[in-house]
Length: 235
Image (cartoon, rainbow, N blue to C red; front, side, top):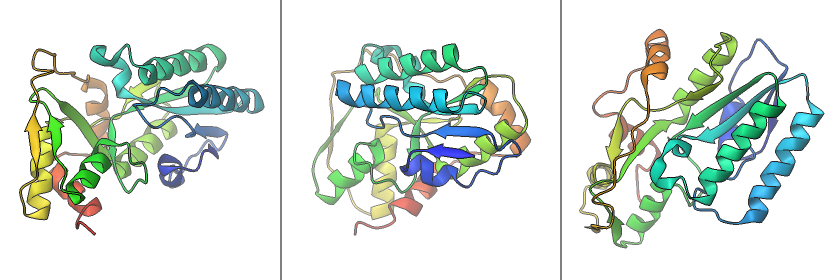
């Protein structure tokens, strides 16, 4: 098993135990969804191409983003880049799996994630601007590892799979969860900028069947409890 990358996903994916050791996990992709730097996109492309050439007979696993299916973000550089990477993998590898992920809950140093952005602003007591139509899907890294291991060891035919929470949460709900954790009010304001925008919905039919087999559930307090594990105090 080969892991290319040394970031948050790479450090956790090491826990995966595979029967087929001839597997490459490419986790060295652009992680900032607001990135517009063409040099960063080219860096990922170059590294990915090199990996595919170096390990032509290996199963290739790539972590993409669920946001590539979000029509409201289809013109963004990051989403375009991820889709182009997916297309390249499909065209140039015979054995691959693409796992599309939503917002991942876990101890990450990436300041650009939604949760870390919220946490940093809460610590500084800064105002957070959000919208009634802003929803995000969040899932913890432990479940991702469990599902990836199960899918790869059971030879699922579907090649592009979205590993997501069965529920999406409004950003206001997320902020309220942080308020519950820190036991204080958080400064936030509502913008009307996106009030006519459709709420992005992720298809959960396929992954739901896998969750049933693994007995994975998302209870009512799931988000609060997961956030409390990671952001339990303001220190």
